[in-house]
Length: 270
Image (cartoon, rainbow, N blue to C red):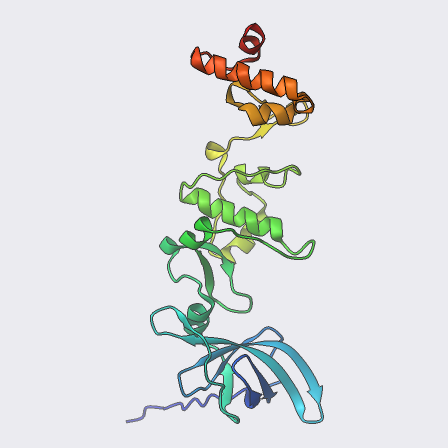
């Protein structure tokens, strides 16, 4: 007795006007909905995740074009859309679990690489470690959109798991990974993402062909002991002469038979 009960009614953001299995046209009733927002459409096969790709104002009101992304399979994975949502179905903001499952972000740090928070959501994003290191990966964006920073985050996550990384860095963009970030303003921003500054100097080996400019690096030099026939031909002008190529091939074969290292001096003596 005497208890106050509060009834919360969640108002829909809009309703479906037209739809196929790829896109939906939605009448928006809440003008705070932003472009790129993740929406949840009611669907007979379970909640359907969609993302707003464009917004326009018309005589009908505000209309959103949304891309249909899929359903959750209930086990942390995604199912493709095979039946369009019904006309007139309600639309609301998507639940984090639906976004996580359909987008394929990992739920635990042990099974993924933490790359940040999903924009406008309190949802950590993890990329699958096995998929990332066993396939080709491309980071594509316009200039200044954070490609180098994103790659640096991935490198740090791989280093945290003691996975070796080789970086060819002609512009010196990744040397800062070796040192801990002590910028107080940036450290305050880190709290939002639940990260803290770390340095990887103890894991970091930097090589440079010009140690006069990059004094902290180890000199990068070619060692003829590690060069085979094709390497020597490509690094010299020997390839311009068939006779010299034949002589080089014969010399390397002789040194191999004699169990001598293929140094320049041994090649000359042979």
